[in-house]
Image 1: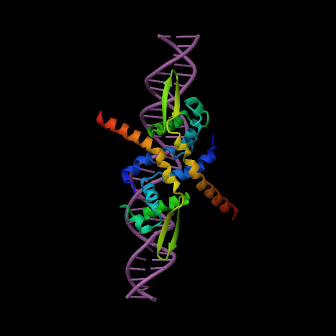
Image 2: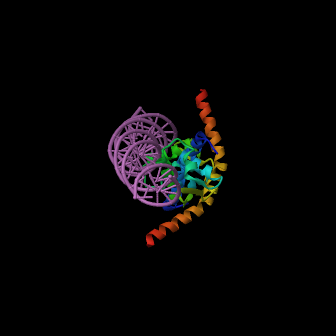
Image 3: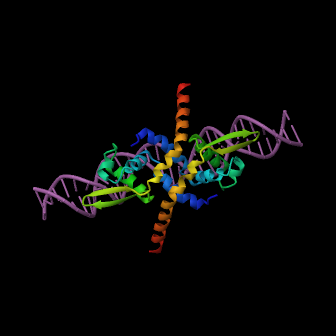
Length: 105
Length: 105
DNA sequence: TGCATTGTTGGCGTTTATGCCAACTAACCA
DNA sequence: TGGTTAGTTGGCATAAACGCCAACAATGCA
């Protein structure tokens, strides 16, 4: 078993991933580092909103950022977090099936 | 890239894991199925609180439950979700180091 | 230097999550 | 049948997460 405080350390990473925007950013960054502007243009959201999402990922240690002149470049530090979903695929498929059933009834 | 709705499906699983209690339950259930009472006794929380945490895990498809007489037995359906942290370990260690630095300054 | 561009930070209102108590259902036993 | 045990559900108060606007720093260019 793990302790509660160990669990809290893990939860920080999990929580950082627990938002559609942040998950998409992670996927996007699997292709390599990208500037803020490129990430921003994936969504119809305020720049401050995106900036804060990126801060959450950064504070969790999932991404890093560096400035080059006027741009901020973001980089995925732990690509393996994205591999998580190789496992989760089964769950997702089951969930979708359950959903379909509900809709068909 | 993944779409926003694909991301939402994934987020449901991630969110279900994004709480210390639920993460500990997942770890606990890696050892095999366990009755509600055993899970409940791991924490100093109201039984209704634990019951609701288990519901979240169930609705995400991570655990299942069955009743045997008066007991409810919970089972981890997707053990691999717990393996996620083999990857996350690096991040966690870095985060702890960062924390230590902050405390030492 | 004056000004535009790129992001970040502060603040606020709204939504969602958490945890307790109380009430309820279901199975078991006297 | 009445009472006990095991869990679930409803409701409420508090806390955290989201997203927008506005204001701010920092770089680059005229």
